[in-house]
Image (cartoon, rainbow, N blue to C red; front, side, top):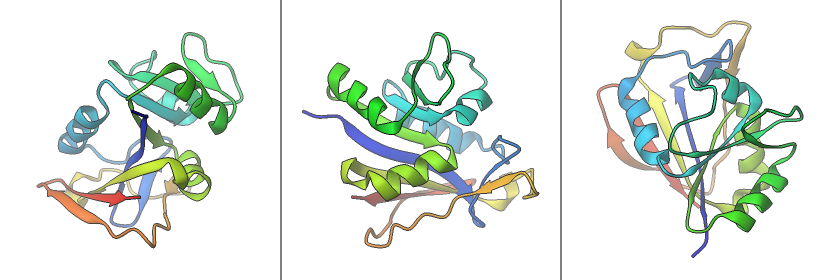
Amino acid sequence: MKNIYNVIYAVNKNNLFAVDGNLPWKCDQDMEHFRKTTLNGIVIMGRNTFNSLPFKKGLPKRVNIVITSLHIDDIINFDNLQSAITYIEDNYQNYNVFFIGGVRLIKNVIESRSDILSFVYKSIIKDHCVHKLADDNCEKLYLEIENNKPCVIDVKDDFDLYKYEF
């Protein structure tokens, strides 16, 4: 079998993705969904996403790969997306691979490598969880996934989860 490539991300109803490089909400339900979904898989992220993690060696119980032009000690890192994908295909089989952020990486995957994607998991965080509002240092994520109709797979108190199949 081959690896299964996915995107997983969260935004609020206004597509707010991050403020000052961090999540603008506290949502334990969504974090638990993220943890369970990505556990024992491979996570690919940009440098800013890596730097925002509470764990300096990456997310536990996952293979962590960072796309960056700067070298990071003790972490697998590449300066481009294709090199990371080639590395995964050469070294891992039957893994769930997740592109987790930031905005530029997720847009790049959707726009230029949707041919490898199986699913996009999108959480929409509900207003009562958001503790930072958009300002000059915010990132918003608008994705064009027009031909893929979302399927609501879970509705929680704090977020709604959508899944797009490719």
